[in-house]
Structure formats: C-alpha cells, structure tokens
Length: 388
Image (cartoon, rainbow, N blue to C red; front, side):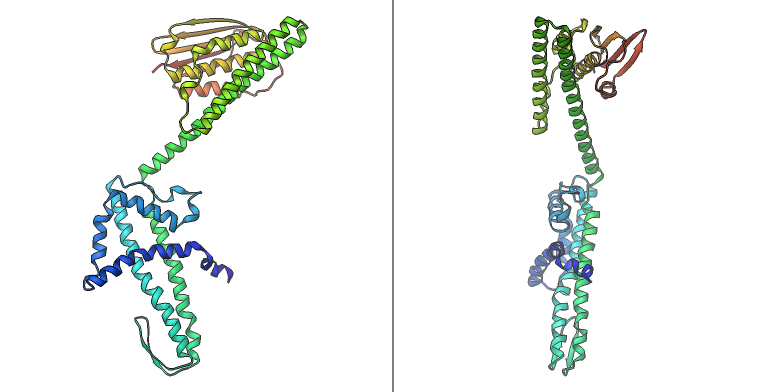
C-alpha cells in the first residue's frame, strides 16, 4: 500500500501535472475568443515548433519539471540546444502536439473526477440533481453512493500518475539528444578523459623524475663522504625539487582553470635542464642535438621533452651512474629521439613499467612510434615523431 501511495508524496508527480496544464492555459484563452474552432491552438504549434529556439525552451522545461532528479546523473536525457536539423524541428512539433493532446485529457479529468467524488459523497446523505460531463445523477439519498466515492479518486490517481509517466517517456524520445549532439557529447567526454590521462602522465614524469634524482643524489652523497660532493648533491636536489614544484603548480592550474596553459609547458628547448640534472646525479650524459629545435611544432616538442625526461629517469632509477648517450635530431619531416645506456644489474626502486607505457602512449598519440628494450648490451629508447 505504501508503494502504491508513494507517487502522491513525490514532487515530480505534481511538476509533471503542472507541465501538462500549462498549454491548457493558452487553449482556455482561445476558447473564450472562438469556441467553434478548438483546433486552432494545435495548428499554431506547427510553425512554432519549427523555430530552433523552441526546442531549447522545451528541453529546459522537461529537464526541470519532468525529471528534476536526473539533472545531475543524466543531464543529457533532454536536449537543451536549439534545433539544427529538420529532423529535430519535426520532433519538436510532434512533442508540442503530444503535450497538448495529453493536456486535453488531463485537464477535464483533474476537474470533473474530483467533482464526481464530491457529488457521490453528497448523494449518500441527501438528494442530488446534477448533470456533469462525467456523470448524470438525479437521485434520493442512499448510503451505497459512499461506496462509489473511491472510484473517481482512483481514476484521478491513474490519470495523473500514468499521464505523467507517459509524457516523460515521450519527452525522452522526442526531446532527447540527436545523433549529432550525442557525438559531440561523446567527443567532449573523450577529450576530458584524454586530459586526465595527460595530467596523470605529466605528474608521473615530473614528480617521478624529481624523486628519482633526489634519491640517487642522497644515496651518492652518503656513500661519498665528501663535503663538497654533498653540497653539490644538495644543490641538485634543491633545483630538481623546485622544478618539480613548478610543474606541480602548473598542472594544478590546469585542473583549476578552464583554459589550460599549454604554452607554459616545457619543450625540448628546455632539455638542458634535464641533462644537467642527470649529470649532477652522477650519470655521464653525452648529448648530441642536431637540427633547429625552435622549428619543432609545440605539441611534438612538449611530448618530446616528457619522453626524454622519462627516459633519463628510468636510467637513473634502474641503471644508476652509467654512461648515457642522448641523441636528438630534427629532420625535414620527423623528430628522432634516442637514449642509450649500458645494461647493468637491476637496482631496487619503484616502478613497474608504467614509464615505458607512457613513452609508447605519447608517441602513438602523435602518430609516431617508439621502441624500447635491450639492444647489443645496451638499453635503448628510440622514438620517432612526425612533425606534421
């Protein structure tokens, strides 16, 4: 019984009722003007529905009055964009007509069904003589009429709840997003996921590189026992930590702002900072940079910097202070980046291959290719990125 009565305590039931009642206000005004042509309001809905902005207004009304509880969880249930195609316009016309037809059914029911219940109640204890569109009753009082009072009330319940559910289902069908809108929403969602993945990769690269340098420098300083070396190690740790903090602030700024400051991200022109950081950590870095780095497109240069950063981080983390050969070559149509180091026994440390996956993912997103793995006694990271 409680489940049966639950719709009566929901606000949605009454907002749907109001939503269907609104068109009847205009119909009532027209009937005062010319009752002989009740079809005129329905005919006027055809050109009205062809106006693109009408679809947006109807979508907003449906979202707030037919399914207000779904705004947060499924905001795309109803379209709130103007009609773009003729298909959207025709669906809007059908929606307006369906809303008016159901309003024609609901409006008389909500007036005369309660009135019938009142008449039956009166007929149970006194004589009545009433002629209504729902029932005609000329009778002496009789207690049996009281038994019929629940019938019109149950009918009213069915009309209000049933038509509310029906109009909501029709709205989802006719005011739902078009294929173009669904595709746009899917693309927007994809962009958000890609942005989250990019931020996660940047945090992994930047913070991972800084922590690796700090750990290696601290271990080397403790093992060396040389105050001068310790001072240099501490300075390197300080510089790397500040750079990581700058990267962290920039990434947090991306999360706070709608406009992401892409231009502030480091590029291959800042590669000297990475090389010096690796050298100060004990690695013997031999760098060979050929070609104009300033001509490399921004996205390629930024991703190239992150690939180089992750490659050097992996060297320090897993190989330690070993000779490293870095080659960056700018060609006519591609950027080639290679990092090679001697293979040594594994050094304990964090990481389970996510860095290598990140390198391959970055290369693939730019249409390039990456090879990672042992090669003739050395570990090699070889990446080729197209410049166009």
